Image (tube, rainbow, N blue to C red):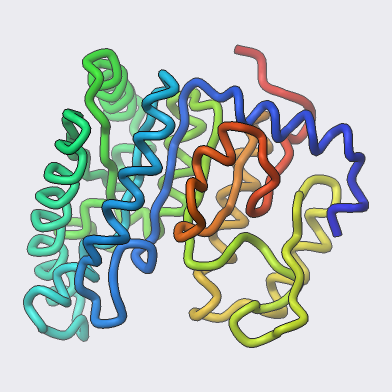
Length: 277
């Protein structure tokens, strides 16, 4: 699939991703919890280790983290049958999630900050300016911003609805240089790799986007890592001249590999050239 793209363009985009100074990393629920929806300490510590690899290279890192509702489900044991139950579980899970992030980053003497957002924060210019200024200040202080949707208060009218779209909007809005989406699959495939042993990883997406979108539409399921919104988010970012990578959260040193231009996951090439900074 990626053979349709020029090798030079793929190599240049991979190097652009490696050279990124400001990186947004999005981690999904399955990258943080076990089969029983409990926060998985090993997974979370591994994510923080990978983020530290970027921070040690003097990169600015913002984490968009899912997992609050899942962590709350495992901690309380209640169902998510109603909106009210899901919102209540998010409050339990979010505090537990941030507690664990605080502990894990403390191993590297790093401090973290929590930002909970709704669609209003992204759409209202004044609110978004305040959000951006807060993030800029935290980065100046060397604090790692951790962003999630404010599930506890979000109604249908103000829900972002998906952290893949939240991470894409934030990447574009705060002038990040790279979006990395970590998931439980190794990228975008020609089929669902969980059920199709012949599915092949698509190395890069650019002018072949329509073909990739058709493949995803035919093979998408809830078990396929929610790949549809990940692809849409990566595409949105690439259309703003920013490279994006969808990669497997459990792969060893995954962020180091991206920062050293190794061919991992699925790379989305910037469309219409690189943005002007």
